[in-house]
View (tube, rainbow, N blue to C red):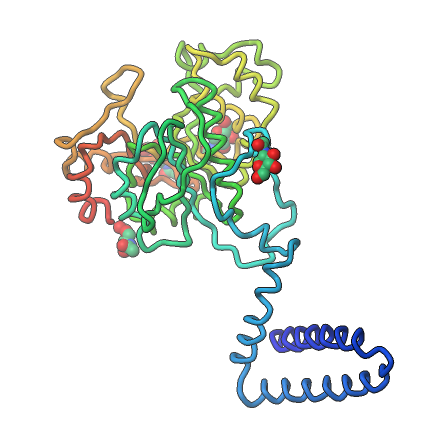
Length: 386
Ligand SMILES: *[C@@H]1O[C@H](CO)[C@@H](O)[C@H](O)[C@H]1NC(C)=O
Ligand SMILES: *[C@@H]1O[C@H](CO)[C@@H](O)[C@H](O)[C@H]1NC(C)=O
Ligand SMILES: *[C@@H]1O[C@H](CO)[C@@H](O)[C@H](O)[C@H]1NC(C)=O
Ligand SMILES: *[C@@H]1O[C@H](CO)[C@@H](O)[C@H](O)[C@H]1NC(C)=O
């Protein structure tokens, strides 16, 4: 019933625009034209009603839709400009302009169009993507449920073939150094670019050495059904945690809210906007969290603990091996990638998911060297499910 009404309404629009044209052309014969128009409208109405009744709705609706779509796209103020992702990712906005633009936030509940929420995979990389073919295989067949963004070192221009998921997915980038505020700037830049696509709902930060540990469907379900975002946020006593806090950050950042977490996070759209819109905590961290305070380990976990504590799972879903000690985690190469290596990652872990205990705690793992690609491609169908 609803569709039929819409069809008649659009038919009416069409007739009215025809009439306007005739009115201008034959002004002196107005009554005649009006009479003809009335007869014409009635005929059209009868034809459309009988067509709906006797030949079915489908063909009529299709015809009407295909006639009207080009008109709407040409309209400068149509809804599509807000719901279509930007056709190209390269833009000339400054960070200031980009963060402002990305902080736009619909305040009305729900979406007036069919929105399929996507995972945005945000690659923060120093070099080309040596494990690209593994990711290609992981994402294959799930088009429409993910988007990819690459923030490389600015000296590097990616050249991926047209059929690659990484093709033209590079965003304007700047130098990012480990432990510095410009690392957080790069992460914000990725979030902000990904926010420009209104369908992106979950934002996953990964590096060139990260791999997925499950197939796409499993990861999509895990993230979409979670009540929390996966950001590590621990209250760590001692020199490497609370010891890095600087009292000058008060009162915006009290020590009771000081948190530490791995840089590799997953946040939902609400938290992503909370991060890009921040102008309150940023100056405090830029000024008072400098090495040996590493802002990429503290800024997001701390500001989100203050702003949205209930939205955080307080754990990361990216597995990292710190057991070898030192400031950098272990890197795994060709000879490390075996079935028993992955059993060690999967077995004997326990964590909370939506308030329940689970043994499925990690969705991604790092760090893998380029030499690990061969064995990973070999082992993935059996062990990782893709
Ligand atoms: C970006 O490009 C547009 C034209 O494409 C130009 O008008 C604008 O000034 C540029 N902005 C910056 C910040 O360079
Ligand atoms: C993904 O993995 C799950 C669990 O291992 C499995 O049940 C499912 O069939 C897999 N889906 C696809 C599309 O391979
Ligand atoms: C994470 O920590 C915050 C406080 O820092 C707490 O409010 C929140 O409930 C915690 N999240 C979970 C899932 O326990
Ligand atoms: C979850 O497991 C831990 C031990 O691993 C246990 O202490 C805790 O009570 C369990 N929680 C629930 C809700 O079962």
